Image (tube, rainbow, N blue to C red):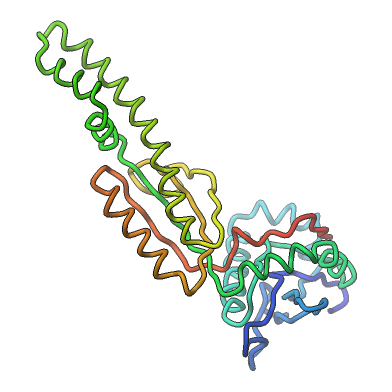
Length: 274
């Protein structure tokens, strides 16, 4: 570590068989400083140095308001993680995880040693896959109407009603169909989530993204992350294909992303960052 520098920590890790530091140094988020290993017991912290002039708390408060700088940092961080993922089993850490010295880093690893060992065991030989589900509300309402005899009967009544009575009946049908659609959506999303989780080592559901974030015309109804063993990937994809065949005719669509390092399953508790 250079004088006036801090440790920028990318991940806690174990080497994959035959993996480890490559022949060529991997530049860190600051290209002047390469990524290196800090050993603690049987695990590694993968770090690079960064200047405290640029990464002290006061400087970061200012720089985090700079969208361009933050985007460059995020891209550099992601570049390093993706390269390290080839040679290490990783617990990726959040952007800009910093320690002022090796003693503080060792202290944090010691405090989380049991969790770190268990988490590395869990993610070893697996990768994270994301599944987002979207739904056309009108198509779902039509499905709900078809599924419920009361709604089918109400729809028939609307069709046969006089023009004067039809307006109020249509409003009643719309409200009832929307409520039925909401109930159906909640029920089926639980079924979809269980179906995917059954093929994964672990699963997490993240908050639903707004339309401006995901960019789809349809409403997002599931934002799931699944830790899938490499040996189980074919089964996981098959399970997703079954969902596509079952639910797409009813207005659902699915988006598979990945593979990623296990971001959603890799946050040590009680970190003590400097």
